[in-house]
Length: 268
Ligand code: URA
Image 1 (tube, protein in one colour):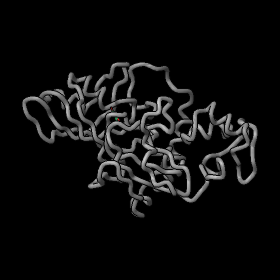
Image 2 (cartoon, rainbow, N blue to C red; image 1 turned 90 degrees about the vertical axis):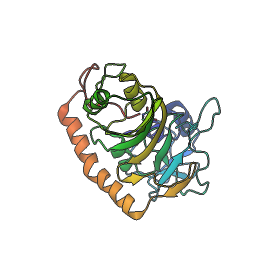
Image 3 (cartoon, rainbow, N blue to C red; image 1 turned 120 degrees about the horizontal axis):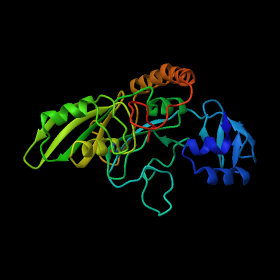
Image 4 (cartoon, rainbow, N blue to C red; image 1 turned 180 degrees about the vertical axis):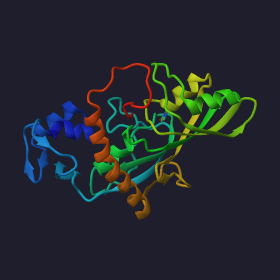
């Protein structure tokens, strides 16, 4: 369990400092009782937490898919007031929802929102390795050797070596290539950096699938609730993988030092 201010920031409600201020101002309740101590232990998987009377954890679960247009930031509040992915979410949602993982400002495509911490954690946990598929347009023609390198794993600018990926060319002409790329990690700007690692700048990037959920024909900017089959599939990932990932993390002890290695990156 963490202090309630940390839990609020993990849920994406506010930064840690802002969350501490919300708590100190008496705007946060835990299981129906107002709390004033930002360090009050809270469990985002089990406790009911409300801010200004609106549930942010412990409410009936909500699962949404949004087609994020390029140009929106994946954050709750931008200090510079730029548009965020929260714009155009239905205003009458029964609960706070957080985006599952992050898409860069210029990246478009499928972004899931939920208030189900178990599902959110599982989908972004690199130890779980849920596949995410992207359509990627890069400059130039990509040689078979470079496609093979992307499949095997490439060394990014910080020395991190990516895990095996699935890659196929969708179309190509003299100036550019569209590829479909599936990765099971989520390092910061990973696909763009994978492109650079093989000498091909990514000029367009769209996410088309996260685990069992597909973007499909959802128009840009639109939001849809997930189907019950999709929710069942996501919950199955959350149920099976979250305890296993926690147990594995405990077993493996302290994390290895940073450096060239495969596999275990922080989700972005
Ligand atoms: N990889 C990127 O480079 N950007 C994203 O937004 C997602 C994956």
